[in-house]
Length: 231
Image 1 (tube, rainbow, N blue to C red):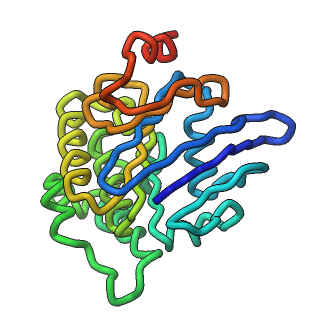
Image 2: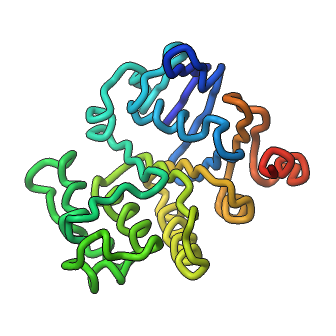
C-alpha cells in the first residue's frame, strides 16, 4: 500500500534523511525505531507531505505522491497522529474530533459509535476542553481524531511519549484491534522497545537519518536493535 523509496530530505542545507526506504501493508504494523533526532519524524512528515522529499519517491496505492500537498494525501486516506498530540486546547473534545471531518464527503461527517467503543472516556468528556484533559486522554483524542478520517494508512508518532502506564495499555489494545481488522496499514514510530516489539510485524531502525537495520519482528536481533535505542 505504501512504498517510500530512497528518500532524501533537507531542511535548508541540513540533510535530515539519506536514501531511506520503507513500506507498509494493510493488516500489518511497521515499527520505526531509533533515538531522538535520528530522522523518524522527518520520515513521517515526508510521507504525509508536511515536508517534501528532495529525492526519491513515495508511492501510495500505486500512485506517485512524492510532491503531492499534505491535504490531498489526507483525502486519499493518510492520517497522522503527531508527536506531542497537537490537539486544539480551546476546543471541546467533540469539536476536536470534528476537525477530522475536513477530508470526508459531507454525507459521511459523523462520529462512528466505534470511536466511543475504542475510547469510552471521550464520550464522557466530549464537552470538556481539550486542554483540560490529561496527556494520556489527549493522546486518545488525537488518535480518535485521526480514525474519524477513515484512514487506510495510520501513522502514530511516539504515541506512548509522556503517557501513564494504564493508558499505554489502553492504546496498545486499540492498536491491536485496528491491526486485527486488517483494513489499514499502520506505521508506528517508537522509542519504547517492548511496546513496538509486541505490536509490530516489521521494523526499521534509524540512525543519523538512515535506516541501519530492518526486517521482520520475528527474526529481529533484539540486542542489535537495542544498541540504537540506548543513549
